[in-house]
Image 1 (cartoon, rainbow over the protein chains, first blue to last red):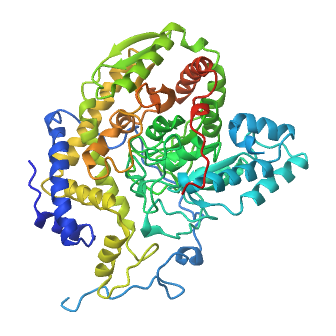
Image 2 (image 1 turned 90 degrees about the vertical axis):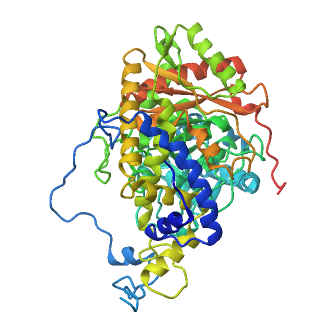
Length: 99
Length: 501
């Protein structure tokens, strides 16, 4: 089932917003191929009559009253920001030149 | 004064309560021990410089006649996955270096409210991904039994801290065995509570359908005492169970008499294999003790356990790839100094800030969740999860608790499995099923390996909500074994002299 190629790993790096060096792509391709071959065995027993479980203990959705909660202050919210203007997070350009 | 570090939390609490010892003395003794040995062990990423002041405040309240909770004044180490307002919280990652949380994790807030004195933050595999702490961005923790060996992971720092008498109590988190496997390799006790039994608010999320916070200690009773402090409903955690819990310390005290073993049905899982001969021998000897004390030991079947590790390494990376998307270089954490768009900065930051194992799992999870593969991988893994829950339901229809060895081998050498992810993943084969099914588990020492003299743990599993049963059973076994050994297993650990590094 595994079809891990360097191009696929590069693409996954883009999707997950992780810049990968060529060396990392090479290493990850081999490792992922081995890991995926090993974990693909789940399909052996996951037949269509088995329901999927997302959480280990049955849970219901949780609601609370629609009143303001204990929120962080603006100062707390920005205290770890790499850059801010005192009231907002500051980042570089959202769009590239060709966009 | 250094003897104070050898006391169990329970005994220290008695001495604090009677006034024989002050919390400031106890805290200073542990800080001195950390200074003495942690250069070798590297259990701590950060030591709390406010610890003595917090201890003194407890002493003052006690002197003023205030009635304090049982553990008030006892020092506590906190795994760095749990956020704290007065110390950095990094989850073992460079991307969060220096991060100061604006709020305390609920378990930390409860610990402070119970008067526990925070000693510092303990080392861990980056974002709790690993079984050896070698994936920490801040260097590995070393096993106090043999400094060339791993202390387990991801919570190797918490386990090593209690094993090296740097703290009587610690908090850990267990997603696939990160509390129980370190307990196994360090001769300590670790508990993964029922899923939802302890709040995860402020626990930096790894895999939200698997993560659970729990106690790391040297004795079963101490785990029960700490579990009593941290258990309970938390409106800040949407998966928190609104269930009244019995006292786990009371369960441990009740179990210590051994009466609980009479007629107790203990299941051994036929399909769970792959343990070293020494681990298996220690396990068999412990089971024989249970049997001799009146337990009925039967074989039970879990035909789908062999798929548990595979399902886990699909579910965990999938959930982790989503949870770790928040490290985006915008709101907190590292930001790489590069030009370009916000996405360029984000990719460069994550490329520089995440270590190899974290990248491996995020890429794997992204693959497992991508269109065309979702059903074959993540969907199938969720079905395996159902089958494993059915395995547990079938077994618990016949037995009260399940017993297994806690991990396949004793502590391996640092570096031994670092380049082989699949070999590393196999360490969790006995602990993972409990996380997939949400059931509680405990690892308690069963003895030392006949091969290498290193500690081995036995794991007990109980049905969801039956955490107290684990405390009763393991306290009974612990009492018999400590009696046989003539003292706690950790008395046999080599002395740490410090200064060798």
